[in-house]
Amino acid sequence: ILKESKRMQTEPVPDSELTGSAKYRSGLYPLQFETNDALANVFSNIWFYKLDNSRYEDYQENIRNVTTENVSNVSSQYFPKSDYAIILVGKADDIKDQVARFGNVTIKPLVE
Image (tube, rainbow, N blue to C red; front, top):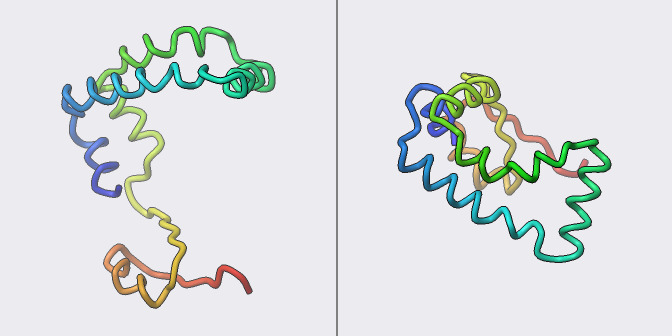
């Protein structure tokens, strides 16, 4: 994850990755409307968040229009360049040595 987020900030996303991702997301999109429950969720989101219908109507076109520059800009804006906080849940003794190479490890009990 760290390597990929850095790569997205420093290298253009290959067209093949961008096209493949756009096709995948666009193909999954209609599944949001398959059941009555899913459709009710869409309508409740529009009402609750006061969304414009175009968010849903133009989604697939907007996905197809994403550029490598868009990906770089958004990843630079939202992914930190350093000082990541990674939270892992598991048996500390089993994983602490494996993740120590990424930085300081602080162990906190899940339940005190």
